[in-house]
Every structure is written in C-alpha cells, then in structure tokens.
Length: 417
Image 1 (tube, rainbow, N blue to C red):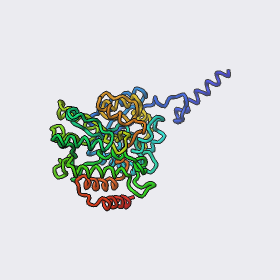
Image 2: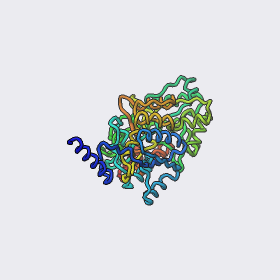
Image 3: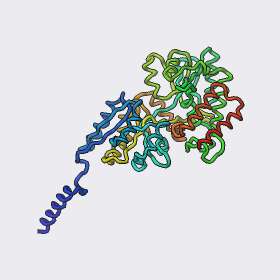
Image 4: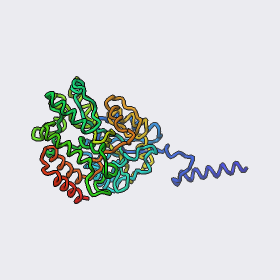
C-alpha cells in the first residue's frame, strides 16, 4: 500500500511538472526540441562549421543548430541590425581589435567568465575583455611572423635571429650580397603597415612597464615602454643602411607585398600565419620559412592574435546550449577539428595541427615565459591610430629629433587616456 501510494504521488508530480513547466530532476531537459542560431563570417569554411554543429547536435539530443554565414564586409552592420530587429543569433562570431568595441559596448553580450573551461589560458581572454567583463572568447588565432626566402638563408648560412641585433646582421649580410633584405606594404591610408612587425619586438623586449602585460600605456608609469626605443633603434638602422624598400617605393596593400616576396623583390616581409596558405597558392614551388620577430632580450616567444572570437546573446533562450557549444569549440576535439579545418592556430595548448608550418608557429607561443596576447588588439583605436602614425614616420626616416619625437608620442597617447 505504501509503495503504491508513493508511485501515485510520483506520477501526479510528474504530470503536474510537465503541465506547469516545472523542472523535474530526472526528466532530461536536453530531450526537448530546441533551436540555436550560430552566426559567423568565415564563409569559405562553412562545411567545417557544419561538421562541428553536427557533432555537437549528436551529443545533445533535441538540439538543432542553424548556421548563418554572412560576408565579413557586411557582418558588423548585419549584427547591429539584428539587435534592432530582435532576432540576434544565440552564438556569434566577434571580431578582435578595432571592431571589438562595437560588440562589447552594445550591452547585448553575456559575460563569459564562468563559461570558460578551467584549463583555458587566462592571458588569452584579455583579447575579449573590456571593463572587467569577458564579452568574447577567442577560438582561433594567428601568429605575427617574419617570412624569409629559405634558399637565400641556406645559401648564406643565416639562422633564425634571437634578438633585434641578430635580425639586423641577417639584413646586412643579404644586402652585402646584392639582395633587398626587407619590405613593408602601405595600408589603405598610406601608412606603412607596421603592427605585425613590432608586436614581437615589444613582447620580447625588456618590458619595463605594464604595457605588454596589462595592455595599457600608462598603467603605473609615466613613460613609454623601452620596447618602443628598441623599435626606434631598428627604424634608424633601416633608414641609415637602406635595409628596407623606402616608403615611397613600398607597394599598396598586403597582397602586393606577398607578390613582391615570391617574385624575389625582397628577402623578408612581416605578416602572420594567415599568409601561409596564400603564399603556397601564389607559387607552390617557392620555399619560405618563418620566425617570430625577436626583441632586445635573448628570450624568445611568439604573439597570439585572435582571428575569431565568439560571443553569446544575453537574451538567448537556449543559453545552456550556447554555453555548451562554445565550450565544445574550446575542447581538444573541437579545437582540432576547427583549427585544422580552417588552417588557424588553436587557442588551446597541446592541440595538434596537421600543417607543419602552422605547427612551427604554434611552437613559438608556449615558452617558459608564457604566452603573449597581441598588444595591438588590446589597445584602443585612438591609441592604434597614434602608434600607426608615429611608426610610419620612424620607418620612413621622418621622425626628426628623437627626444622631441618620443615626447610628442607620449603626450599624444596620454591625451586619449
């Protein structure tokens, strides 16, 4: 009689729970039919995301993932419009760098601090953090590197430089033997594109301020980090010794710079690991190598840039599924499928990549000194604009008196703090 009464009570409770929508602990919520929308701009790799979504759906019965692919040129505007139309995706790609603020300041993103796996490198989340909140989490990355003509390095027995001084020696040897050592391109505004080049110099310098660690120019200091003085020393050496193609002769656009390189017009150029596949397509017979640009110190580590970050809508009706999907993409299985599929650097350590050149760049990142997240993706757009202008002057040999130039640079940055 007692057992029968208990059974009746449980049945009544179960029926009442179903009718009222109350949570029944042993009735799995994951069985319920539900739809999650995932939006991204990586249209060339749509099949990779479809595969990932399919695998995640198999792990979560009742879940359907709809994928929205939007061109990168239209992505930001489309996402902002989705806020007005109240049809935001549940999970969506978030750009790093200058466009990140548009998303972070929208007030529509979920703070992901508690969503991150326990083993996720906390230094990387700085790239998606603003005002103490983790609005986006990097899921794929790239590494700023210097590309070099492998045949020339072998012919003149050059080795991977460990310091800026070593780099200058390599340039001088190449110049002495009749080759143009180095080239940079100009951006759409006519400035030399210096960001990827100086990232490694700053990360591998003396770092006597909190700039690299905190992403702030004047956190506890009143002067620029001495890493910028290392950059200036290199810029002066370039100008004095004609070690790079002059600005007035530099090509417009990064793609033209790639063409220069494979055609033998320069022995080295700055870029990122995203250039690797493009260079192979341009000339699959041309052999090149890569190294991370060093600084003034003998330690050597690469810099990680976020290529794609992910955010979650704070109004998502399937937030637990959205959070689980992000965690899946950060898992070893998810990272291996994603990064090998799209030819990007994993953000999770010890995830193997099949491309040997990407694997080499991945090896630059994890050293005894830790990983260094991109500085340029953490500073503000106003700060980037100031540095872009000042570095353009330096590498075009037009900065004038050094003391006045550095003081003006410092004051300009302080004005926008």
